[in-house]
Image (tube, rainbow, N blue to C red; front, side):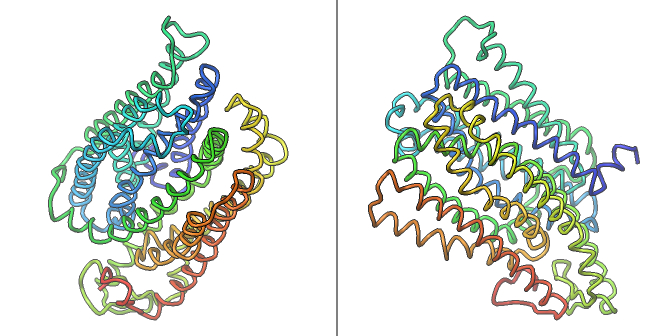
Length: 482
């Protein structure tokens, strides 16, 4: 095993790979808004279409790929079968992404009417059609990244990120920047076309690199592998569909408040879900991979030994969840999440304080090119960012359930949306709210949901810690572990 292979197979090595992988596109996302703000400030909001197309695409991305750490991450399966699972995942996701892209193209006018303010709607339909095919490349990229991270290959997502970011920056400099060599009149459609081209090249480059470096048997997709991935993916797909449908319902209402609110929300998300979320994402991905490895190890040990001090099973099926009777064993499984929790809490708290008191207003002004939008973005950030700090640490705790017991994860992940977000969405749809007071209520919806997420997933992890050693099969939740 080479030194690089040794590093990427460790927890801290995976964190480093993931950090660079996530940082590059986050920086580009910020830079692309800056290009458009300089060229046509009124079209900054149009570029958010890419984000909203991505939200719908996320439902597919969070179906099969999110169970990769649970299924493919089991290192006690044969390497051949794990590769087959990977290629099955990628092939199926690519097919779904193609269907979704075609649907977006057909429905472009309707999509623009929901998520683009009326002031710039007519000029945004072409951008919607360009962004539509980002779904295809997004699902290929996401599936490849999830599969390869589960194989301890974070170098593949890193390659995808490097290729995409470098190409984007070079082409933006040539066609969009103030020192561009192109003599035409660039606009948001130019930026969208460049971004789509770079997404496609990067996704294909990642596939080619993975195929070249992982040569061997097991590269042919199979229905058996698809069935094994699909069974637990029922949970992740259903949760993502409900969560993102409620989110887009809220976004459509925010867009209806006018261009300033829509642009401010887009800038806020660029900042909050861009560079500021990179550390949390890096630690979460590493935690998922290594919890998945530990869980697979103990499942196999339990199946082989039948009954010992640490584990016991009543069936021999490999998917059976082991009865972990030792607190020490549980600590081995959750240790990556606890390390991630501590680092994330410290880093995100420092970033939130720095942004809230020093950087947020000038940064928002720089990205949007508009003082009113910067004021709204600052207000949003100061009201919500402490909630996002809780959200980032909630991700680390949620990794425990996502990589082990998807049934418990499903209940905890869905609870805040059903108990908090849905009632508020219905209330705001029924009752009229003035534009001046609208953000007060939306701040409560978004922030309250994030806070509730933290407490619910904490309770879920506590329940998991209590239930697993006692061999609670939880048949009322799922047949997954039967």
